[in-house]
Image (cartoon, rainbow, N blue to C red):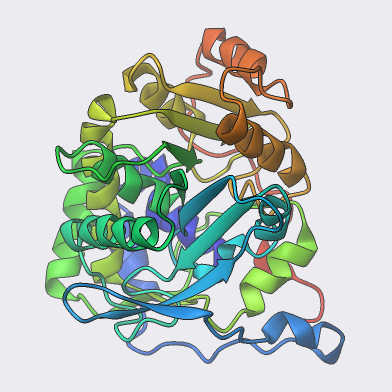
Length: 360
């Protein structure tokens, strides 16, 4: 699963633009693979957690949503959008800590993911952005007078970037982007993906089509839970692959127009969003956007062993945005931005692929 996300969203595609079609065609399948079942020792990792509520959108669509209520004084409420092939469970390791600091978190499934009825399909950028706006307004109406924040990870960050660049962006107190998937793959890779999506939209990628390996997080407990969670997608339709590339490009175009206070967080060990892509995004974001760099962070910043540093930065930025970030991420970000680019668009070598989990 993790390996597939890299195939779909990193710039190594630009170096495989001529070979990719043959490799993709050779490895595609027309059927979803059976869901993985954990061994007895990890049975809890395969649990299906029911939603706490169903958010009803204006078009009648019901959105399964987890809610982690704030404990004690409610300081803020947050709409959290997950990443590609993930689900509403993306926040289960971080949300309790945020709740303990007075932040209520709403985590809906995005269309085409998690427990949505159109699971596996691609709704399109406009629809996903409109959903996020509607969900933000619904949550705001449930919590009048409470500051509303938006939190997006990877694909979810791209959706929020597009949303908060629009003239009709919802009135929010701030936007937090975790390793947002905001960059342009380039004309060659995007053309290949569009052609494949047009000719074979229902072909599935399972992550074994290209020789690309990544580590998305360094907390194996969290990685096992992600892998065995029944809501996690383990095969991706070609239509969704091309859709993700288009979303990332639209978000890159929208980034300079991002409205309102924002915090963008990036990890030093991110192997999904290339450093060059994040450096480009940081250059084009409005100057008042807060940059935060977590040297030990992986792509799934809230599922890694350094997540407490990320959580602390988020909580303080919400409650006291004028103070330096407790992780030292302000200084680290300034230093990282000042370093010359290494000229590489590809992730570093794999450390331990999720597909090699013991007991699988």
